[in-house]
Length: 77
Length: 426
Ligand code: HEM
Ligand code: HEM
Ligand code: SF4
Ligand code: SF4
View 1 (cartoon, rainbow over the protein chains, first blue to last red):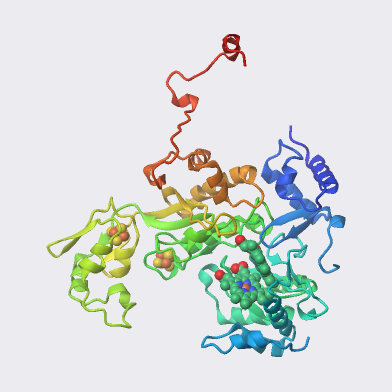
View 2: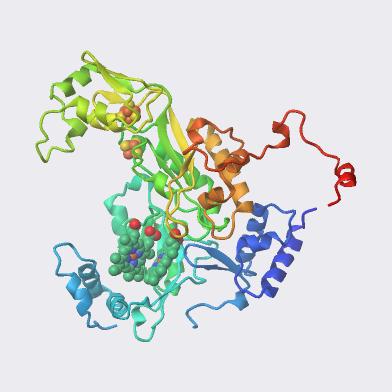
């Protein structure tokens, strides 16, 4: 049984909070629920960005996801 | 943001060609931050190391692509380029602009950015170079509200699709490339604006095998127009070329006298599959051998035309040389009808079959062409539900092993492992 959307969001948030690396690939979230299709996970992760629970980090060629407090902008650095 | 001493760059202006240094200096008179582009580049020339930092969390709300964060690592010394983000703007189909639209876009970019542009980037979209984080939202607001234009793709998104001019100007186009590109762009807005994939994904549309948009070299799905029936020959036109009354290649080589037109040498002798010959004064083609290279049609456009049963060849997996060298797309579907009548359904199904598989199996930062290479073409074809055909084979096999699947062997090869282990301990 796939997780509900809210359960999935919590699992993604937990994963992004606890992982040693602050930035994660979308594929790293697939493991949060092996029963959900990649596209479902991508839609949920994008929704979490709109809700402010996750942020994008992009090199320009690759995009990653992070918990807002865990990464800082280059502008501060 | 003052002028810097730039002797190394200044020297680049002394050559016979137009110089980007001159261009940037001219722009710096209006936009003083551009002096710092020259300053930091001069420093990099001296120190032989880049001072640009890649990536960041910049973007506009609701979008996960279209903005590429760039910063200089010496902001105190070069405050003008402390932030120097790149914005990608989706280009109009076939890059048809009105001058009014270009002026408006340039005014907008002078207002919110450095005024520096790259028309167009390798992906095909408009590249606006250099702005600060706080300008991104105001720029995006004006772009979308005042101009009705949109950002393109970047990062792990579907990238801005691109097409050749197609049927709008070109008699060779075997399907409506603009319609296909526009339809798929609108259909996949979510994939363009929100990262979905292990890495970037591109599709490009060329109307015929001349492939003016270089789809085969730079797109993960290359849709290249072709025909299934015979090249249409107008024998009266052939005679005019042979008699020297029509210029070869539409007159494209008229800058020099190449001597009289020689159909044997310039057309028949250059056909890569040697499938053309003359019978008296009639040109003959063995169309089942024709590889649709376009050469004969390019040389004699008033005598030869693509066939009438038109569609496209679909190739998959081109990429640039970041890992393991560059590669062209590989032929997967020799012929597919490309038509708006069914909303490009067959093509969309094809693309989504690839995505569903690649999103699951592709590694982080692996282009689909690399995933295909990793698993091998036979595996990829079975994922796509496509039977292997001779055209899929590029070279004789170099691997002597054949691993049969059970359903391919008469009687199968089911074993009772428990029974077997009784006789052969593990
Ligand atoms: C030593 C210096 C640099 C290196 C080694 C480098 C390397 C790369 C690589 C490997 C890519 C990915 C190419 C691809 O799309 O397949 C890339 C993309 C890019 N780089 Fe750089 N880069 C450098 C400097 C810069 C600078 C100075 C800027 C801008 C200020 C810049 C802006 C970009 C942009 C906009 C992209 C395209 C991102 C996309 O594909 O969406 N790069 N770079
Ligand atoms: C010596 C100086 C430079 C040279 C020779 C150079 C050369 C090039 C070339 C050959 C390309 C590929 C163009 C294409 O195929 O479309 C390119 C792309 C690009 N350049 Fe430069 N460049 C220079 C400086 C810069 C600077 C100073 C910036 C920004 C601060 C910059 C930003 C970019 C970007 C963002 C692209 C990628 C456009 C895309 O997405 O395709 N470049 N550059
Ligand atoms: S790819 Fe073919 S159809 Fe498209 S513009 Fe070029 S020659 Fe014409
Ligand atoms: S299109 Fe190319 S392969 Fe076909 S007949 Fe003409 S020259 Fe030969």
